Image (cartoon, rainbow over all chains, first blue to last red; front, top):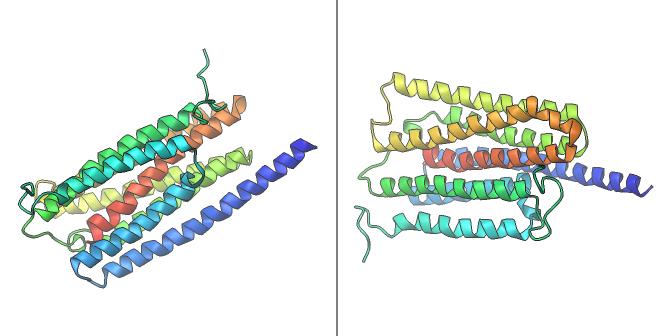
Length: 106
Length: 196
């Protein structure tokens, strides 16, 4: 009896997951259309870069949180990703610390 | 000797070993693509002029490829959900769909590359094309790698389902994590290279 109840609970949980996947899929499609539409406005480069990366970040977060299940992951995985993000930020910040002709800012 | 912690979680980590393994691998992948993105920023900001991606590249084709890859991510996660529901035939359908969508992505990319070469645009032409071919080429190799693993689980690797369904489900989840990562990288490549 308890096995049956557990099975039903499990099935309901997966059904809920599937509904979330479909919702995220629709959101990702909408955000893809928005990304292309915004690019056609020919905004100034700094604004265009900011908006495009903002939308991409939202899309990436949806994929990571729901498709990759990061929204309900164990602490060790968060720790690994925390260290990765820290190094990633340093990596991306390095070019910012240089001048336009490639020399370091003093 | 059996491989330990393929199904039961370790007491100290609270995870199965395979999951830690795939996440550590993805962490190294983040650094690989991060280094290339950093190179892109450095080259672009150091250039006197930089072309808008849509003046050289084919945005409609890339938009279709974005839709294809996002759809493949959904079919991948649905393949895993099918195994969780103990529906093996449904898993096969979704996994087959994922592999086919990966193939569609590569075919579209092939046409894109072919057109560039036909019009005399090569990685050596300028910095923009050099970084475009490097980033999309590396990403394409990841798509091929992901397809190979998925094809293994669709075909010969699926035998494991009969003897150890939990382990097989976990392996499909890990392969899915890699596939979603490939999708995630493309989500950033698309606006960066094609639209800005």
